[in-house]
Every structure is written in C-alpha cells, then in structure tokens.
Picture 1: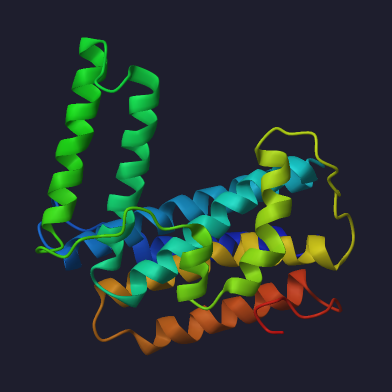
Picture 2: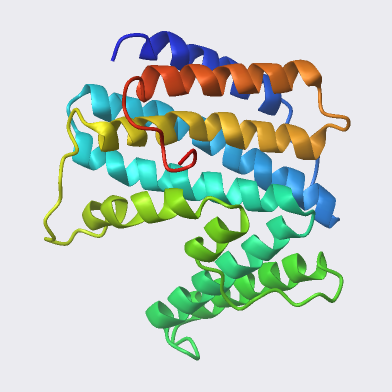
Length: 241
C-alpha cells in the first residue's frame, strides 16, 4: 500500500516521543501503576504494528490477523485503563487470576512439584501487591474483552473483528476469508495502524497534566491520515457507523 512506510515512520516517531521516558521505579500507587501499564501497552503496540505490516507486505494476510487481534486487545485495555486511575490495576488483577488458573492446570492444585509451588506462590504475591493498590476495593473475578469494549464504547469494533481474528489464531479449521482487497481488509489495516496512536496518546493523557494541545493536534492529524490511507473509498469503519 502506497505511503505506508512513510506513515509508519511518523507513527513510530510519535509513539517514541510520548513513551521515550518510562515511569520511574516500581509503582506504589494506582496512579503510578496506571502510567506504567499504559506505557507497556503503548510500546508493545508500536512494535506489533511494525510486525503486522511486515506480514501484510510479505503476503501473509491470514497470519497478520493474529497480530491484529493482539493490537485490538491492547487498544481496548488502554482505553479502559485511561477511563479511571484504578482500571489498570483491575485489569492486571484479572490477568493475574487467569494466569494463576492456567498455572494450576499445568502444575496441579495444590501444585505437585517444587517448581510449580514456587511459580504459583510468586504469582499469588504479585496479585496481592496489585490488589493492595486498590485500597480495599475488590476487583471482578474476570472481565471479558466484550465487557471492556462495552465500557469504552467500542462494541461495534469488537463484534466486527473478534470472531474473524480468532478463527485463525486458535488454530482451528473453521472457514476463514482472506478478506483481500475489500472493505473488511481495509478496516483491519485501519485498526492495526491506529492502535499505537491511541495507546501512546492514552499514556500521554495519564502521565502529563495538562495534556499538551500540540500532542492532541498531532494525534488527531495522524488518525485522520490513517483513515484516509487505509479506508479510502470503503464504507466507514464500525466506530463511525
């Protein structure tokens, strides 16, 4: 796609400019944890978008959907974490509980090996430390990506993308469209390219008060350019419909 390389360079510059200075030290408050969490999502999104376009340009459209799903999840998590100071800690608690459930499936409950005991004890300690940031507020036991999408008002994006993204990622044999040269593929390009712009801006909003108006203008300009480059004459993305 013409213009992608130049745009990706400017996206990378925008993201690096906002995330070049990570939060100092170990977070000891929910606000500090929010900044750390959003910084992690933003830097990971920038790298993953570069990898997504390497796959697309190499002709691996199906494989690129795996990274597009990763970017969609990082985008939703960042938007949710930016809504309230405590949301990043809530997301981390939910993620650690899932990880603990998986560790218990692997190592037994109670764990059968010293290695399993050490891993589970360490993960439990991290969960306790993250819960402490919530100052007595109890996080939900689980929080699905659909629930997060509803809370950030991106439900249409979720319903348009999650099933087709997952069909290939899960290694099944369900019928799957390549989505070549149509509105759906264009929309996937939009989502995968816009993700680091959104996530970097969420980190900036959380870590810099007041928000720099020049950053906001560049954020809006980049999103408009991404839309014009990827969607072009196609129907508007679900976010706009």
